[in-house]
Image 1 (cartoon, rainbow, N blue to C red):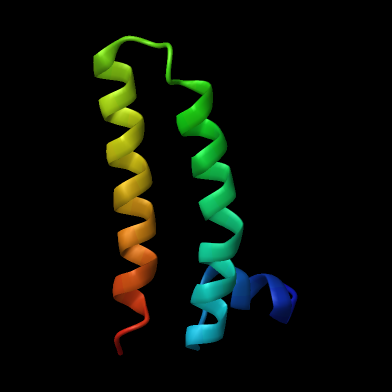
Image 2: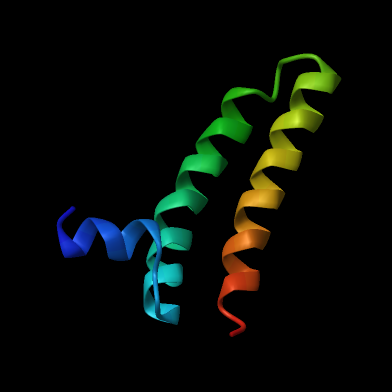
Length: 63
């Protein structure tokens, strides 16, 4: 696997995690806006996934 792909998937530095955050934040914002007219359960599920994903990236910066 090329080194750049490995660094994006499993970053060893805070910079890699911040790049993941920068990529995923607009994605989750789009998904949240796209699901705003869905049922409450679906919206809650999407919000939970977004929070778990972004919190995981934040937790990985503390090492």
